[in-house]
Structures are given as structure tokens and as C-alpha cells.
Image (cartoon, rainbow, N blue to C red; front, side):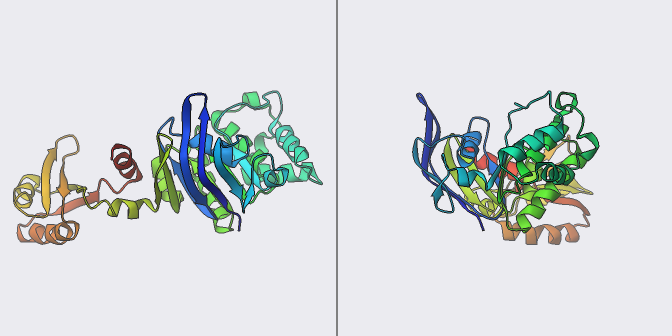
Amino acid sequence: MTTISIDNVSRWFGNVVAVNDISMTIGPGVTGLLGPNGAGKSTLINMMAGFLAPSTGAVTLDGTPIWRNEESYREIGIVPEREAMYDFLTAREFVIANAELHGLADPGAAAQRALATVEMEYAQDRRIDTYSKGMRQRAKMASALVHEPSVLLLDEPFNGMDPRQRLHLMELLRRMGAEGRTVLFSSHILEEVEQLAHHIEVVVAGRHAASGDFRKIRRLMTDRPHRYLVRSSDDRQLASVLIAHASTAGIELDWSEKALRIQAVDFAGFTEFLPRIARDHGIRLFTVSPSDESLESVFSYLVTA
């Protein structure tokens, strides 16, 4: 089981501090790395991959520093966000070249396995400059997997992929996590992070903002109301009854959604009271969904806290 440890790491570029005294541990399974643009996610990933040295602190792989450590590079595969590729090569040539750089005994066979894993055999002999964005992403993925790394680092891997490609990549990353590999990916597609990552690390303005399961993080925010979207057969009557109850702090009629947006300050009280008063007043509930249990909402809270 391979673990990456980041211990009191900072990284600056001139007068710009990109990462500020961050500590975290990335272990086996799938971890999502979240943060707004400019938060320091790519800088962190590049330090974990050995592309950048920390200005202070240490980034280690199972206790051994990654920077300028050739052995650690053999354990790490990276899918960078940047599109810098050798466009005049075919995908097969590109992946074989990476296999040769790793000194694999049979680069051709390793490349075929990696291309099959990402479902790119059908286009492996086309030049990369003819590829769509999603196909280029899969070619980069094959190159990262060719030496069968125990750690996989992906920077915005879903960019440009169509829904089928995204589902395939999600299943692939789940499988790798279940096999005991250490998988970390950054993404702005928050719904997919919710479905995929068993653990999240949140970085805001170069600092470590939160760590853990996003739902548990949300429930620890007891000072903030829980928000619900409710659709019913009689929204006006339901609102008039709910507004007087101590479990709610505010109710808004959303005309565009044709629903009520409710702030509940007493989570348990509200979830018990709502179905009871709906039954007592003959109101049918069509939708009752938390609108701030999403990762996007949690992230927004963390950024503005």
C-alpha cells in the first residue's frame, strides 16, 4: 500500500505563494483534490509527481523524498492538465515512447495493454493532432498507466470527455482504487467527484481548508442552516404552516423551479415535522431534496467561511 505524505509544504514563485504550509496524506483508494482556479492544486500535484521541489517542507512516497528520486518515479503515473503532447506521433508511438523511458522489457506489449485499458485501440495509429480533446485525455491516461504505477495523479482528467468516456474513466479509477492503488484527481465536475471520491482534500488560496468525507464535513457545520428544495401539491399552504415552526429559519417561493427553498435550523425536527404536517393538511410531497448536501455547496461554504 503506497502513501504520499505532504508535510508542512510551501511553494512560492518569486513573490507569489502558490502553496502555503500544507500537510496531508494521500493513501490507497480514490481521493478528490478540490479548490478554485489558482488555489494551488496543480502545484501540489506537480510536487507529488516530482516535477517541482517544495520551497519548504517535504513530499515523500512511503517515507522517501520524491524530488529527484528516480525510484519513486517508477511508482507514479501522472495525467497533467496541460495539453503539451507530441502531436506528430500516433497514440501507440506516444505510449511506447513512455514505456521505453521507463525501461520496460516489452514496450510494445505494455503500450497495447495500456491503450486497451482506456479503449483507444481503434484510434491508436492515428496522429494525435487529429484527436478530439477527450481522445487526447485518454492517450495521456494510457501513457500514465503503461508502467502500471501504484500511484496515479490526474489533473482535471475529465476535461473534454463525452458522457460515455467519463463513465468509463470513473469506473476505471474506482477499480484501481479498489485494487489498493493510490489515486488522486482534481476536478471541477463536482457531481462526478461526489460519485467517485471516497475522500476529499480542499485547498483554498494555497491553504488546506478541509479533509475527509464531504457529507460529514457538511454535517459538522452546525452553525449553518440546512437547505431543502421542496415541491408539493400546495406550496403556499405548506409554506404558511412551516414558517411558524421552530425548525425553519426561512422559506422562499422559487417561481422558476416551482418549489419552496427552505432553511432548516433543526435538521431532525424539520425532517420529522414535514411529512406529518403534509399528511395532516392533505398536501402531497413530490420532491424533498437537500440543496446544500452537494459537494458544490460544501465547497462554497469552505471558500466563504
